[in-house]
Amino acid sequence: MTDESGAILSWLIENRARIAPCPETLEAWWASVRAPTARWREPVDRALARAFLADRVAYAFAAGYQAALRRLVPSLPDDRVVSLCVTEEKGNHPRAIETRLDRDPAGVSRITGRKRWATHSPHAMELLVVARSGERPDGRPRLELVRVLGGAPGVAIEPMHGVAFVPEISHGTVTLDAVPVADDDVLPGDGYDDYVKPFRTIEDVHVAAALVGHLIRSALAFGWPASITEDLLAFVAAARELALADPKALATHLALGGLFREQARILAAIEPCWALADDATRARWKRDAALLGVAGAAREKRLEAARASLTAERASR
Image (tube, one colour):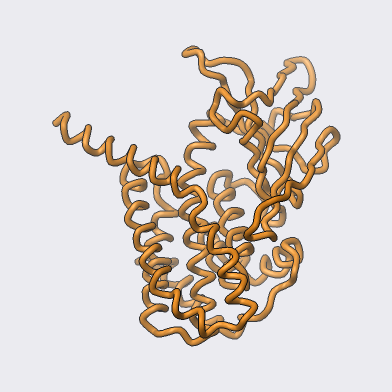
């Protein structure tokens, strides 16, 4: 275990006095936790610290999601809520992306399109938008990731409703109407291979770490058995190391399979412990625990692909 990993684990245990009710809006909670956690350099450590200061699953998810975006794009400022905008009417596969980036070598480039289910977009001060800018030599669409200010001219964001759990997590429909884009706003690399694909893994591990950081808060606040706290801390140590690993590496995907099996075991073990929590906390957990199963099928598919790759490597030797 690295010194930094040990430091964040100690911080989680030593800051029991910070456990208190949180503001009722995401914006107010986000503003309240940034300064007390600014000391942490790694996004995963900030996710853990901020989730520990969250009294509900939605805020813990926000801590993990925002940290994952900083791991993906380290230049993002910490004082802005950011939204990754990928999904469109036909889905999020490269060929489903119709939002386009029209480049003008002699002037200002512009981005036009419509995104759906963009997490945190109604609160976002900055958007990371995946857009098509032509075709690659193999015929696949050339995709790029573009930074767009949430309040830029031509940007309209409409909140989406209808999710029964974690109501504090907002989603929105983002419409971009010929929004001006500077060259520096177009991030280097392939928008899909270098950003969208690895973000799935980055988000998985950062959100998993954050949710368990939030559970450590509950374990300390409500006097759960020491063995539960120990298991949660061990999970955090493992998740933190994976958060720092290469998100494209085969070993990372295989290790994530084991990490999520351990998470499932811990969640089953703590279920009786919620009887020790106050009524409001227990009710929120029962309402919001469904979030942990979201994207489970996609994770399993990625794990199966990693297992198949490992099998193929063995067979080729």
